[in-house]
Image 1 (cartoon, rainbow, N blue to C red):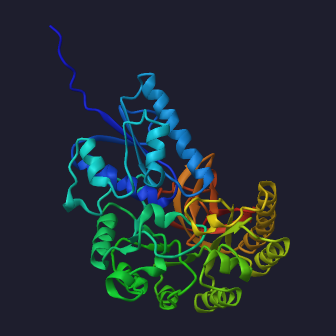
Image 2: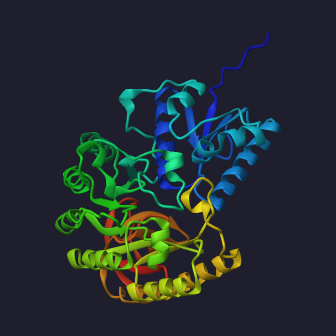
Length: 435
């Protein structure tokens, strides 16, 4: 007699792109788990695959498409039953994707979570708002404080994919932080398209400082880190809270994009070179020792050799602690798409390489200055004979790491803090011993 298998189907959630996408995937996984579904992240395979895509720039779009095609191929070979696609790429290009890759079972946008859950046989549980299945190490978590963006930047397609700015109420975020702390999270990394806009829609004024003042009261949270602070209209009271509250990392991620005034104007950034320099000086004055991370775009339409030299010299003078550089991506339906993408790709790549070479030297010099000093370090993992940790001046995956040779230390617990004396350095890493 034949018996029908009732084996539970495994749902594999694959995440591409930024930490905001990772947060969304964790929320999806939390909802699925609450409905009794077996869910895994980034597994080699699963019965059902959900791909959370990125559609920000060309490289990210290509990675998303390649990933979709990979799982479609597995489906056609009988290794996967269903493939669903969600996130920014399908929000922006759903009709095109349905036409070009019809083998995908269904496409969903960035605001289709209840519909996606229904298709996966799960119910959207309102009482679980803010609950997630963490995919980061247990001791740190990203916390998205708002969705969407109201900024008019000419090069950016995010408002097309994520909609307008919408803040999450302070009391909801505090409850989320308490829940995360109860699970053992010690570091909160606050993310949004723009943290500085927080509260304008709900409270009619910028309230990031008030949110931080409430979050530092949560027991168990020891570090709070700020990602993606827009320079125009920066709320200076945030710096006062940062200087006053030891739980708030002396670290800001402020994507400045460029410094040449004609480029800033064309980018519609709402600021100037003079205002930007004044803000950076204020940050360093109000929060001594602050680490400033930025990202830049080279090869924007109309960027001349002179514009680029101004940018490069400014990077040399400003001495950012952390810096990333992107080449301009000509994105349809953005304001800049009306301009001619007139900087050749090889020139864009060469300019990005020049900026990163300048930054590498700066990073090497700044790290050398840390040798002999002692820092509080959070241990993230072990790898290649070392404990790998971070100081408050470093965010996971993108910044410097502290390497502690395992043979030099007694047993260190992942997710605990230790005082580490720096004994050596490289361009992007510190080497140290526990003291």
